[in-house]
Length: 373
DNA sequence: AGCTCCCGCCAGCCT
DNA sequence: AGGCTGGCGGGAGCT
Image (tube, rainbow, N blue to C red; front, side, top):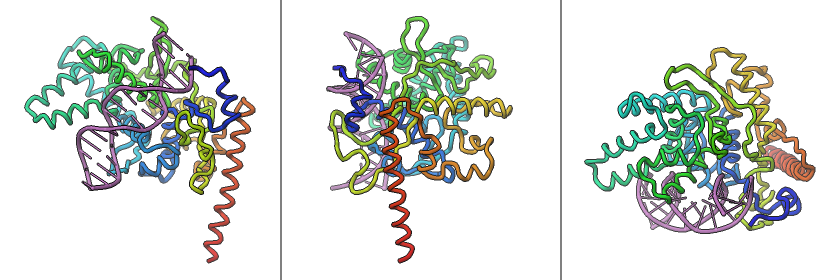
């Protein structure tokens, strides 16, 4: 089913052609985080976020659930989430680690393998559900399968086991406990892909090939304490072969296999917001910044991903510059403007920028008129 | 061909 | 009743 046409080329010939990479959860998450991690942002409305990012609300649910699992967000009310920021991650991870180790110690005080970390959670849940009605048991079952719990358990696997590299099928079978129904495995793995993509985009984990079997596996890279000694062991492999998401303009609502001619810039009479692209160059730049931050501030014990806490990211910048930074999408777009190697992509991006700028002028004029009236 | 994971259906919950 | 939430698996893109 693979196309013989170079996707990048095809994309340029027909900008509305479906491209899977543009719609990845990881890229969407990166843009969602950019949207949130700005001065003055305290709470996030799901509708607003979906609107700004040009995606369906359903996708935002996936992201917020995963982000909630590591404390970056917390649910305030229906449709409303509180932005806790990246500084909440170490605490949340630490809590998960403690929780995982505590559960483990009940089962075994010596063995720290992957399956044990989760197996005890299963038995715990079963015990708690024993004298409950079938309805609440059903809710428990649903909760247990939630993306948030799954993401938390996934984090626990990294922090409560001796294993450094975890493949998704290994994680899936650990999370499933003693049940090894092939269909359940497949489903669990699908969800883990979702979670892993989000974590990769946050630079919490990294996808690498397992030296044992050459299969893809994940490694925690952001921050880690040795489960046994408790000593920090921040690690980061320098050469990742991770999939390069977001070399193009990001998520626009367009159905799979459907070239929607109205979907590029103008929708319902409104100019769509410029979608901030994430490219690897930016990612690497931000990683460098993260490392610099770590080195420059001895008190910090957490290497943040590309989207560190707003307060921290400003540490090395003057106050005046801070105010200028990321005030609006235009600033973001120019700050993080990708340098495309590909001419077509570069021109396409320029086209978007131009449209955005003309909209800005139009909007400013409109505002001016309103002020005069 | 197997891996990856987007997409949207639809069940359950909430207001 | 209707909107919100999110588990789930089909199936298409990617490698």
